[in-house]
Length: 354
Image (cartoon, rainbow, N blue to C red):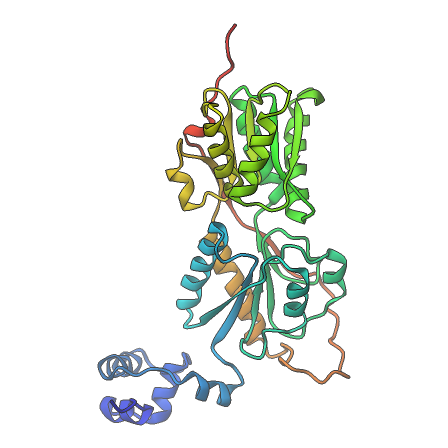
C-alpha cells in the first residue's frame, strides 16, 4: 500500500500542502474550520508523520528519552507509563533506557549519551554522586525525576522525600506503634532522605532511642526486603511493632518474610511503604503506602522539558566543544509534587493489652 503524502491530504481537503504541514506540526495560525477539515482528511486517508523527514527539516526528532534505573521494578514501570501518556498528548514518542543504577551509565547520559536519538532527556538518577552532578553542564534539554539531590542547576520534579517518610511513620505512631523499624537505608540520596524523615517523626513523638531501628539493605527489592526481615526476626531482639519500608518492593518482601515466620500483619506487626504501586492493593493484607501522583510528575516534567526544547535560547544538541555553556543566573526549578497516604489493612495495629 502506497504511503499517504501531505500532497494527497491537501488534494483531499482542498487546501495547500503548506496548510496541511501547519496542521500536522501544530502551528496555531490555522483557522478552526480549516484545521478540522484537514484533520478529517488526515484521519480518513490514514496519514502518518514521517518523523525522519520532520527531523531533518526542523532539527528535532520527535523523540525524548526516559532513563530509569530498573524498567522491571514496579514503580519505574508505572512512572514510564505515566510519562508515555503525557508525551502521547503532545505527539512525542518516548524511548526508554535502563541504567541498572550504574553511576557510569548515568554519567554518560548526563554528558549527552542519548541526544543523538532524542530531543531531550528525563533522567531518574540513583547512584550518580552529587559532586559529579554539580560539575556537569549538559548542553541539551534535561529534567531530573525523583528525589536524588542534583543541585540547583537542573530542573527536577519529584516528591518531598523527607516529608513523605515522616508522614508514613507518623501514621504508624498514630496507631500506637513505638518500636518501628526503618527498612531500606543504603548509600543512596533517597535512602538518606527517607531515613531523615523517619528520624524526624520518631524524635517529634519523643520515642525512646532504644526503640529506633534502621535496617540497611543493598537494593530496594522484594528479595532484599524478605532477607532483611527474616534476619531481623531470627535475632534476639523483641518483635517490632511496625516496619516502615522505604519502598513498596521492600514492603512486599517484608510481608512475605513475616508470613513465613508466622508473624501476623497487622495484629503483631504493622507495615507501611512508599510508592503505592498497583501491586500494593493486592498484597495480603493490602499495603498502606505513600502514593506520589505519577501523572502530575510526568506532566510537570514534560512541560519543563518542552520549555527547554522550544526556547529560542535553548542550546543546540551538539555545540562546538570550545563554546562554553553560559551559566544561568537563577537556580533551576525544583518542584515537589503532591502525594497522599493510602491507608489499608497492613497498618491497622493496636497496642497489646496485658
